[in-house]
Amino acid sequence: MWQKAWDEVQHVVTGMQINYTGVFNYQEIFRFIDRHFRKKGYEKMVLMDKEKVFKTGKSIHARLRPYKVKGDARLEVQIWIEIENMTEFIKEFEEKKVKLNKGDVSITIDAFVVYNQRGKWEVRAEYVFIRTLFDKFLTKPESANYEGQVKVDAVEFKQEINSLLNLYKFMF
Image 1: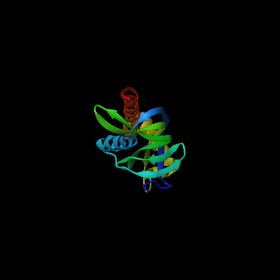
Image 2 (image 1 turned 90 degrees about the vertical axis):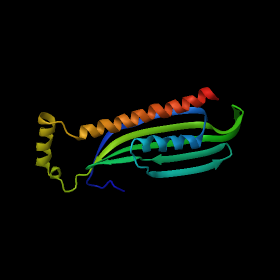
Image 3 (image 1 turned 90 degrees about the horizontal axis):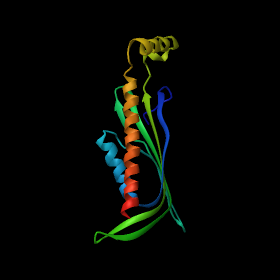
Image 4 (image 1 turned 120 degrees about the vertical axis):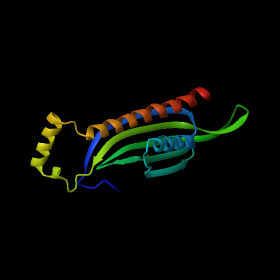
């Protein structure tokens, strides 16, 4: 994994939540996530993907972390997907049979920037102090652009996945 003990992690968004109960297409949600982040230039990283089958339905837990490397920084959006009581059924829509799922979906989104500080002059405390003074009073740090970009990407993703789930609510 790219993140090491000497890297600085700047949390930009934590715990943005989407909860949905109803009809959806499980495979379409994951395809949407892949397309969305690929379009923005992110690489896909799957950290966890578990599926359990119960009498009441399936339980799916996934943890995705799309990332994009920009110079000495790495922009990451972490997505926790939990689907409970998922059942499959077939519905006829516009004279076609469509395979759909029903259940409880919970998506949590975190976004952060990981800075690679190894071997940089910022590692020493007195240099960090000087760098902070420069960033605060003389120049705008480039890192502010990264934090803003990853925040925009995370918020935009939340709005679009929420719209996708609401579309299922009104279509079926």
